[in-house]
Image 1 (cartoon, one colour):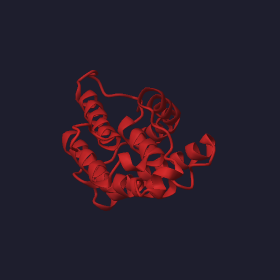
Image 2 (cartoon, one colour):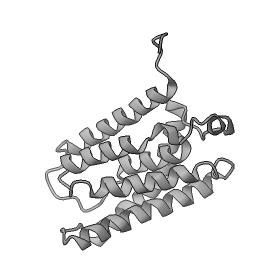
Image 3 (cartoon, helix red, strand yellow):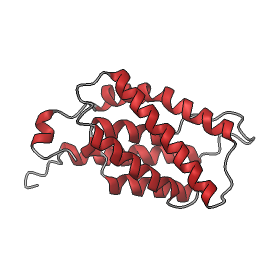
Length: 178
């Protein structure tokens, strides 16, 4: 980088990591003192799924693994459990990004919903295998539904505020996309 200008790829990777840290910070804030009876969306999961299918080069697996491992440690979840599930889900989404380039948004949304359901099932299954206490099934289902409902909002905000669009054939033919 002789000119000192950071490439868009590294800028967006840094943006992904920074947004992830902001989401983690907001999750750690003690905004409620009583147990919640509802579960909102996990915006870190939704953002990762959206970015992995739209621009796979902005979500390298090592970065996804690190941010979710940090989230596991800070949110006192079993270390590495959700990180491993998210790395697998991100890899799946990145491999499908090329075929989803010409698909409609509804198709992308359905696939993202199926991936988010698979993430929740795999995570709960992993917790059950290791006999770790889980949230109630109702809260988990509510969170998955909220994740799927939040997906279009996250995609819209990512596209309008950050210019995150589907990768083009030129990007993948040049070997830029993962």
